Amino acid sequence: MNEARIIPPRPRDRLFAVVTLVLAVLLLPVAFARRPGHARELACGWALRMRFPAEDLTGLTDGAMAAFTAARTEALWRHGQLIGLTSGYRDPHVQQRMFEEEVRRSGSPASARMLVLPPAESPHVKGIALDVRPYEGARWLEEHGARHDLYRMYDNEWWHFEHRPDSGGVPPRRRPHPGHAVEATAGGPERGQGHVIGK
Image (cartoon, rainbow, N blue to C red; front, side):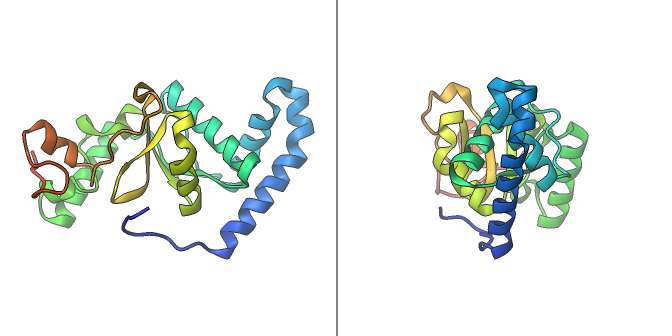
């Protein structure tokens, strides 16, 4: 993975993963009594809610929610990896505010698009985008996410994944940054050639 802003592994992340897995194992009998066919998923969900209490999964499309739930369940049970959500669905007003703040910070709409898209273009507003943590969880999702139609989309954002069931298990072409899609549709330069054209 060649991206900017890599967060180095922290010993406490591994400890949190072990504790969360042990908690899921302890919750398994209760989950089995509640939903025998989905006990592992339910126990995993309970344990992850305790580990990431501030997560908000509301607003994701049904498909994105199901894919994310299946992926993080597999990650925890098979590989002892945690995948937490830092940002999923965003209200259009929130996305607009984020875009405007990035324009002020970076100096132009074109440079802002390298990190934040306006609401009409944002996959977060559509409910299909997932910003995940920690870094090791994102690495797991990059390696195994295609089984769940979850794909890393940008070179400059190791944390950003999208639910793309229409890709048929083939990863969509990764773009250098969020604004790159605008270049391609506006007849701008191809990947790695030139600058971003803002609107």
